[in-house]
Image (cartoon, rainbow, N blue to C red; front, top):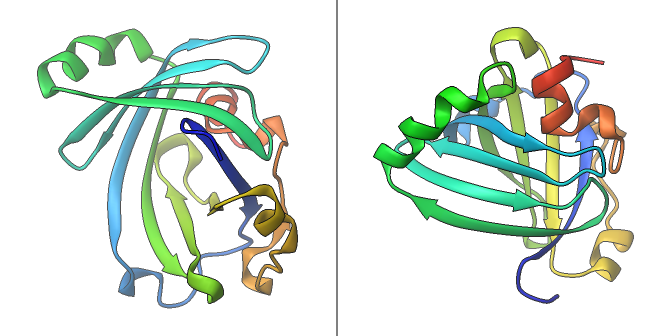
Length: 157
């Protein structure tokens, strides 16, 4: 895969998986500075104490993603511009077969009760060959209703 391209599948986890708290986790706050109708987005994100600015193409299996670190001062300056377009969640890293990892997101605030999981792959062939364990639930890859940017603005579908 070219640099700046990600291949991932997204799933709607029906309920909080047992033992989720036993896995490494991070608190994530992200807010959207720009959201375009074609799916392009610009977001500011803080994971624990690390901040980034990210530009992404629209939802789907393969997308362009460019992420750059920003300092805390810059994050704090941008954060007010995301009012009304924010997501707060705890991300758990759950190991899967084949050396893969499910990033399970337990949403908070206006999205409390929602659980999603994303699995990133080295290429499209691996993504298509992946057989998800049953607990991952219904696949929502490319479903704009479950894109974080949509969840931030419109809430749970």
